[in-house]
Every structure is written in C-alpha cells, then in structure tokens.
Image (cartoon, rainbow, N blue to C red; front, side):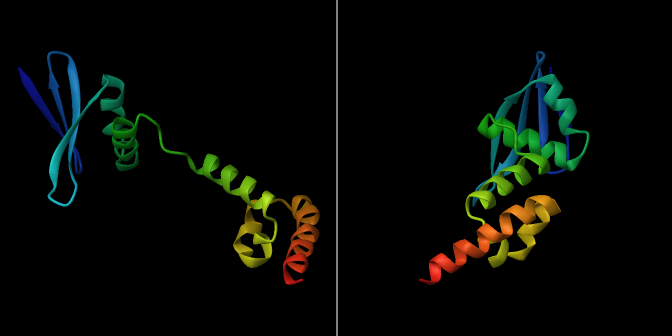
Length: 116
C-alpha cells in the first residue's frame, strides 16, 4: 500500500519500504521523483532547510555546502587574490586581525602592481 507524507513544497511517497521524494520543478511545474532513504525522509521533515538539503542531495548526489565550508572556500579564494580585501571590504570579515596584518600589505602591493 502506498502512503504519501506531505511536506512544505514536497511529498514523500512510501511504498513497500521504499521512499521517493517528489516536488514540482521546471517552467511547467512538472513533478520530479527521486529515491531516498528512510533517514533522509526523517531529515526532510525536521525543517525547511533540511528538506531543501535532502532535495539537493536527491537530485545531485551531493550535500550542499554548509556555512563554514562556504566561508573556508571564500577565504581561500581571497587569499589567492588579496586585492579583493580592498576592492570588497566585506571580505575582511573572513579573517582574523593577525591574518589581515599579513594579507593587507599583499593586497596593497597587488593593487599597485595592477596600476602599472
């Protein structure tokens, strides 16, 4: 027997111990269906954020980056192009004072080099 669990913007279909997550997608809001585990079904009902993460995982096979992971990626990118600390001052919030003490001279140097 098929059982439908409704969430906020998605549904999970349970049948014979197997689970599929479904939501409307694309310009015509066509339903898409992806197999998921029982654990991911439980996760999807914890919060809207968890449901979003489960849908991304079901569709792509990869979990979305967390806030900390994304910040580390941004930080590494800015370290390779330190002039971004001056061009986009908000980037300075990614670094500690001692890190900025090292990077800001490099940023100024990089900007001066691009003016030549």
